[in-house]
Image 1 (cartoon, rainbow, N blue to C red):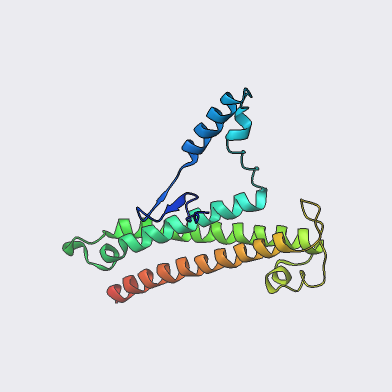
Image 2 (image 1 turned 90 degrees about the horizontal axis):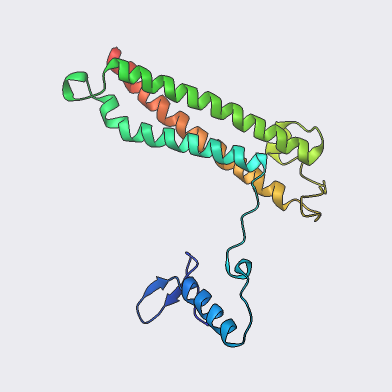
Length: 189
């Protein structure tokens, strides 16, 4: 059996590349079924639709993309931000706009993460605080019924890891914004 690469294709040893042979496989299945006189329902060959994301995951992904976009903008504009106007740097109005946007994204993302932490705490401990959910105290010893009916905390652990990742990204955004504002204050003095 050929090894599967990370993109879902099959690793071709002879060519040294990952090859996606899904369409070839589907065509072979159709041809074989025609030879033996069976019809091929399309749902057997098509990918199954992804289940809809729940509100927690949708909120986390939205916050992640908002924070990531702002971090990319701050990093891309950092050199121009620290330069003076005369050296092809940003104008004061552009710096003000970037600072305002960074502050807005930082605040809205912080609120979104707090809402996600509260919803996690409610689903885990029936009213435990967000701080307890962050520290893991509300998760310990609690067996929670999950969407699939299984007992345990793997979905809650995944959500807690998502919150930890979002908090790390938020800290990075704050660090970048603070570094740019510090350079601006230093220039003003």
